[in-house]
Length: 282
Image (cartoon, rainbow, N blue to C red; front, side):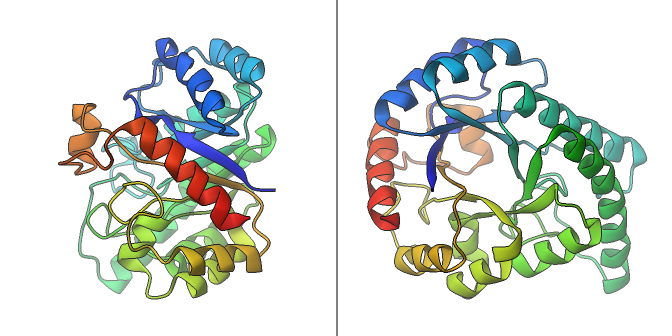
């Protein structure tokens, strides 16, 4: 059964302990899950967050924020170690809060792009897979699964499409490293939504359902019927999370290139988006 979620980037960044009231807001709106991005490792008291999740009855997932110093594919060994350490922190955090899913571009820093030869890419994939194997072992022991998210070409040059994600997932070869998909990125990179979802099917553990402009799902040109049909064809029953941003949260709006409000209000985006997705998947 699909669980409908909201990512707190819609309202605030970074998410801190004082923002736990957003769980009550999401619950009142009808969401089943709240996804917390972990920007700073000291931002949130996870014990208090666990209490809030238990009190509201909401499920938890975590969004990995891969900054410049958190990069399992980087040549610099220190930056690789930081990436592995950060992902282990995310694993501990989601487990403490009662969840078991982490999504994001766990393979490289967001914003780092480079032109690689075939040989360079082979080395980078091997380096990344080696580091993610460490993460995978740690996650297996904690009962946590990480969904590797392909991003569009403007945010990374490493993993842009499902085919590339499948290649890396197979190299890591662990049930703890799987795939998540985001319709916003798919709309830029995938030639066919249905075929991409079918290819990801055996590995798909998490989904972000976003409009092409990060606005209200259903208000743009994402091929939603094809998206839904493909998910149903693979019997997907994980979470479907709305991830958008507000222009009032300046730093994340700049990072996500949100130059104008994606909807008349964040709350409207959440409530109308939820209603659309529920009807879509009915």
